[in-house]
Image (cartoon, rainbow, N blue to C red; front, side, top):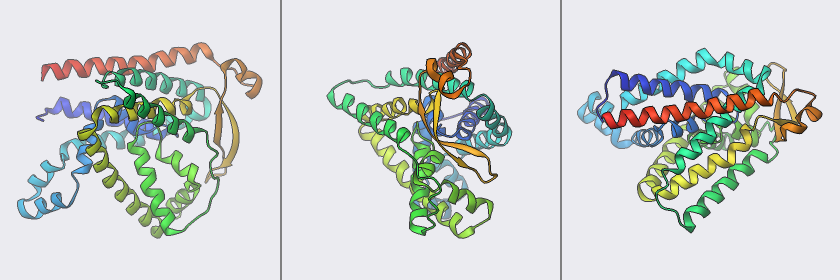
Length: 315
C-alpha cells in the first residue's frame, strides 16, 4: 500500500488514541486499533517479524527488511503511542482520579459506536456466528467481574514469563487491557515493583514472555482473519460487547489496594445503576454530563469512520 505523508500522520493520530487508551486501566489499545481500522494491518505487520525477516536483513539488506515488516507503519504508530503516553498520561490519570464518570462515559460511547460499525463487517450471519459472538462476549464479561488476586507476590520466573505473554495478548485483543490481566493474576504489583527497583531478571523474563506472546498470538490472529474472517470479527465484536461492563461509568468499589506510592487504588468494582449511585457512593451520578460525553465518544468513532471511508474511496 502506497502512502503519503498525510496518511502516516493519520496513522500517528491513531497511535496517539491507542496510547491514551492504554493509560486507562481496563481499556485496551487494541480496541482503538480495531475501531480505527488498523487492527488487521497491525496484527499482520507484527506477525511478519520472524526468522524470514531477519534472513532478508542479512541477505538483502535493511531496505528489504524494513519493507517486509512494514517499518514505516510501525514508526508512525509507535511515535503516536509514545507522544500520547508522555503527554496525556498525567491528564488521563487526573481525570480517572477526579472525574471518573466523565472519562468512563466517553469510552463507553466510543465502544458502543465501535460495536455498531464492526457488526457491519460481519457479512454472513448464521448459528456459528451468533454462538462465537455469545461465547466471546460471555468470556469477556466473566473476566471483568471475577475477583482479582491482590498482591500475589509470586516471583516464580515461569509464572512471570506467562504473565508477560498473557498481558501482551490482552493488549492485542480489543476490550481488555494487559494491566487488567496482571491485576487478575496478582502480578500487577510484582511487575511494577520490578520496574521501579530495576529488577533486570524479572523485567527480562517478563519481556521475553511478552515478545513470545505477541509474535505467537499475532500469527494465530492473522491465520484466523485469513481462514475464518467472519467468525473472527464476530468473536472480537463479542469481546468488546462483553467488556462494556468494565467501562460502565457508575461503579461500586468492592476491593481496594495500595499502589507503589501508598495511594488507595480500586482493584475490584461492580457496575451499578446511576439511580442508586448516589445512595451507594455518596457522590453525584452526573447523568446529564455522562450522557453528553457518551454521545461525544460515539460521534468520534462515527466521524472517524466516515473520514476513513472518504479517504479509502479517494485511493
